[in-house]
Length: 176
Image 1 (tube, rainbow, N blue to C red):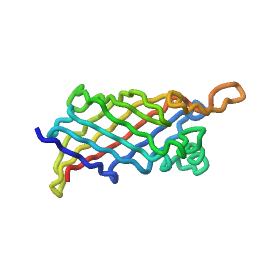
Image 2 (cartoon, rainbow, N blue to C red):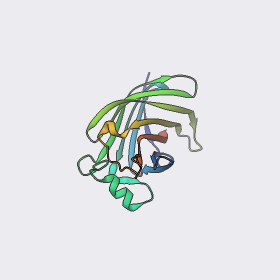
Image 3 (tube, helix red, strand yellow):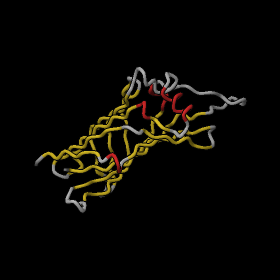
Image 4 (cartoon, helix red, strand yellow):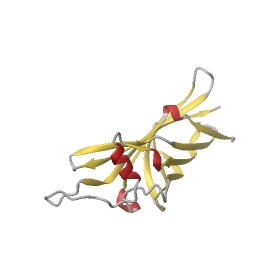
C-alpha cells in the first residue's frame, strides 16, 4: 500500500471550543491559526496518523479583553507555551461514519492521553479532480489537568467558569 499525505484545507476547516460561563451559558472561542497533517495507507482511515498544532496567540472569542486574558499566565500562558499540539496514536473504526481517535494532547507543557469522537464524511473527487476527505472531531478535556485553574467564585461560592472544555473541529483535507 502506498502512503498518502493529505494537506489541510484551512479555508474549509475550523477549530472551536466552548466552556461554561456562570454555569448557565457558554463562552465559545476558536483558534484562527492552526495546522494539521493526515497520512494514510491509500485511503484507509484506520491507518491514519494525525498531527495538529494551534497557535495560542490566535485565540479568538469575539472579546479582546477576554482573548488577552486567555493568552496570559492565568490560562494558556502563550508567552511560555505558544502552541498546543495533538498527535494521534490510532483511529478505531466503529461504523462507516464513526471512529474513535486516541492520542496525546499537549498544553502548557503537559501531555495527557485523550480520546476523541470522529465523524467521517468520506472521500470525494472535487470539480478540479482533487481527492478530498472531511471529518468532524469532538471531545472534552478538563482544563485543570493542564494547569489551567484560574476561576472566580460567585458571592454564593459557585465557580463562574467551568472546568470541562468541549472541543469541536471540522477538518477538510486534500491530496494535491
